[in-house]
Image (cartoon, rainbow, N blue to C red; front, side):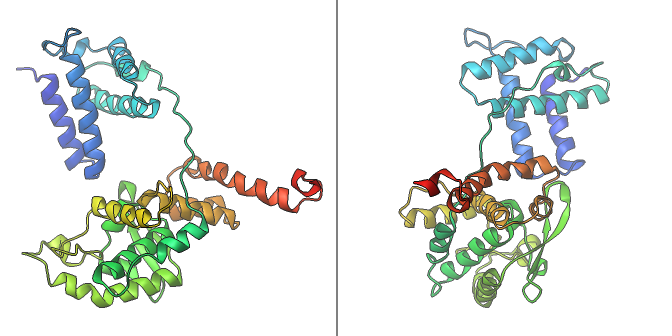
Length: 316
């Protein structure tokens, strides 16, 4: 009996999980995109259910119509482009298993993404943020170490929560990170992050003592939950950053990734080489890192206007 489209989606997701070893976050994205595509195919224009088409009947026009439906629902181009990339990967998998002869998604042009400059914080805002945690509390000591390491090393939040004790060398001020695609890199951090980490590690045993039936993966986790002592989650880190930004009483749209963007922007403003920043951030492509040059252009313009004798601002 020939497998249905739904069954092949399940097979593909299992392949991503077991053979490609993609992160849980990436897997959720693939699953969401494919389930949405399946729902589109099995829902008639009047809203009633209809049978899923045969896989061989899904062509480039089917995929274009799906993208058109996304635009009608005001999906962003970046979201549509990601869903198309998911379909390309899925169809490639089907072609490799000889379910289809060719990949129809390859014939569909990817929508041009909107250009969004990364959000980042000023140095003054960063300084204020780092003064918010109360170091007389367990939460404050832990939270400052998190904030300092995010800003001091430009880590992704997924990388931060995945850190174990042995990944950190305070004496050398280095952290060993397992990034996207299971690629390892060594990233330095500054003396302020080192001091915050050292202070946190003194109180970490109190959090570790709260572990209930500790899992092997949790025992050596660097950052622990205040209530249960287990490994801190990415969502929890997001809540921590949101809480302190709210306390700043400023109109800042900051999140864990903002500190990563801020790290890169401040490094570039201070004259760091773009390729060095690429290595520190763990970007596979230099073009990903180059978007920070657009942010830094504002700083260059300010420097020019303040310093050049023929600049507009100096003549006023």
